[in-house]
Length: 484
Image (cartoon, rainbow, N blue to C red; front, side, top):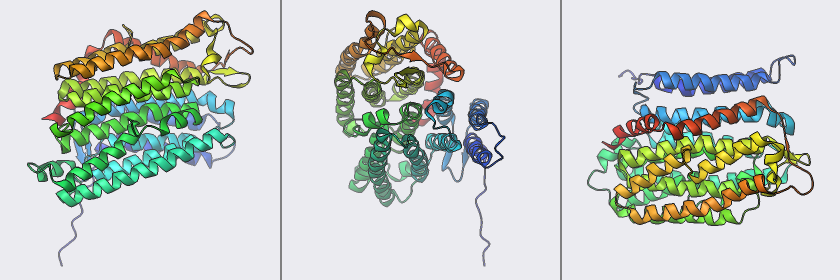
């Protein structure tokens, strides 16, 4: 009888993810420990684990590694997204410390679930196999479903969790069915082997339908039109700190997996599908911006804004090449800091002992809390794309890539949408600086950790706006090997 040969187990490429998972396990063990253990310790362990994963990621830059028969690929592309995801999760932890204590929802399970979701995002970024894509997506999604319903006594939180779960499960079924059809057509789930097996026969009906179903699943995760309907309700009902993670980390991870599938499996957006992506990008950005105008809830407004930003990023995918796809990576980096900062301000504001989530709650904020109002104004101006902030540079790279690729009219539509977006963003700025509050005034809730998170985000959007070239070059260098 022949001896069973086991594949070599190489854990190096998984080290950043393993650090995050080990931190999650340690947080749960601390919850079982004696009562004299500080309640702040689990949060400190979560933050330390994310910082350690970030440092390991930076230390491995330029050192590619593969594990489990190429199912895990830790190249510069995955490392770049690890940096984005770890920064997003670290900002979430900082914003959550005092926010959870104030709302009475502080628990070790929260910190563990944030870390599990982060690990799923990192797996998505490093997935070289469709099975790992599914596993990473489900690890991330299941954790976020529970986190969305963290406020058990709030009906809106329970509604958000249920909608997120039901629609997420529906989207996952599309993803699994698509993977099954692709396996039936190519005989493998490895992205590299699928590209080899389907070379010259990408018009195979089984393969085309499978890829179409796969893109439906990704469309839900990135909240592109028409798969966006869950986003406003979930963003509004979920705890604001959880909304930050959904809006930044999960979106970055889904784009990472989508880009790798398109770049490796399909060698870019197929020519036959370019018109569909063109329409999808235009409709997504237009619907997001137009509907955002009618919102009176700031979290819902930012939710529709995030849908519009997905439309901008789809332009980069359509443009293709290191310039277009690299612009998407850079845009995700700037978007993460800007969106985390905007939602972070909400976590630090209260009105009548409740979270200040209505646009009207910020009327006259500049006179009472000028620093907080200035921070929110800068984040909103960056989302508009006002120089010299990071949002302007991100849009400049994306729209420039579209023009160079020949999609001039799509770039024109994007610029017009940016002008529409300026209306509802500047409406908040006008209320903060040019109106007097009615009734109870919005108060600032002191938080050292939250203030530190906002400071980091502010410095990032200024730095990325003033000195963008090194980071844009890193983004292009990270994606270039995938496009060969």
